[in-house]
Image 1 (spheres, rainbow, N blue to C red):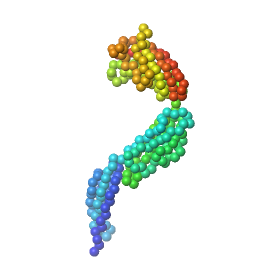
Image 2 (image 1 turned 60 degrees about the vertical axis):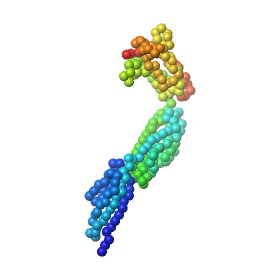
Image 3 (image 1 turned 90 degrees about the horizontal axis):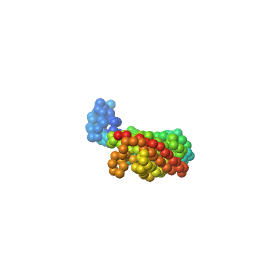
Length: 231
């Protein structure tokens, strides 16, 4: 008499994957029992303890995202699951493209890509992420965006007039009406004029602005112009 063959499989796979046993395909967490016929015509009982994981979480962070040419950036791969392998690719120079936290040397604006695979517990799980590292631009007017009109009507589009640039370190924005009254002033680049003056909506007309800023390369810049307030 030949004994019944019994086998238990306890495994974890990624969401979207599955396991085939005989004519059955399993892709949900649970315990399953299948009876198969072995080559000697005896029953073979397989118990499957299957866990489905939602997959690998992944995020890339960098010590700096705007640098001077030739600067180095410390990269970090962050995941809540154990990672089996790292593959980094980029036009930037990496000191090691198979470790969790490599160092990149940046000589031009660069996308850095990462593909990861889970360890044995998360076999088959993969994910990817990317991060962009830009170069500090020259302290020139073409690298600073100041709109010539805005419409503070609370529709979610162009409601605030402000200076935008990735090359600025700090700056002060002044806005005057046609009579020379200062209607707005701020030294916070994240803030702008919402089109009010003394708590009331400002008139629809052309205003003058004066901006004095300091760039990341320590150079200064002064910009003057007009902006039209629309409703």
